[in-house]
Image (cartoon, rainbow, N blue to C red; front, top):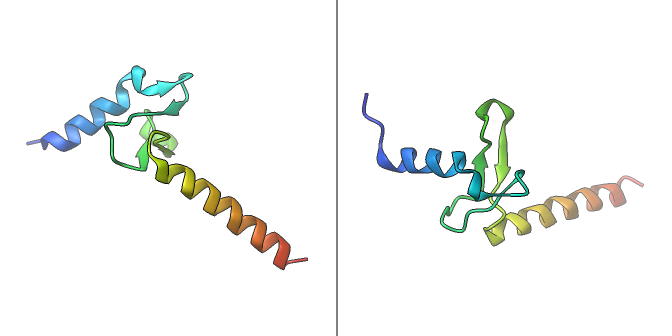
Length: 73
C-alpha cells in the first residue's frame, strides 16, 4: 500500500510535540490547514492556532452564538 508524501508529512507534523504550545494547542506555521486532527484521531479535531483564519473562525462562531442568544430573548 502506497502512502502519499503529503499525508505522511501531515501525520508527522501532528505527532511532533514541538508543534504544540503548552502541550495542548497545535501551533504550526508550516501547516496551512486550519482544522487538523488531534494526536489521538479518535478524539476529533482541533485548530491550527498559527493560522489567522482559526481566530476568525472562533470569533465568527462566538458572534453567531451571541446573535442567536440575542434573537431568542
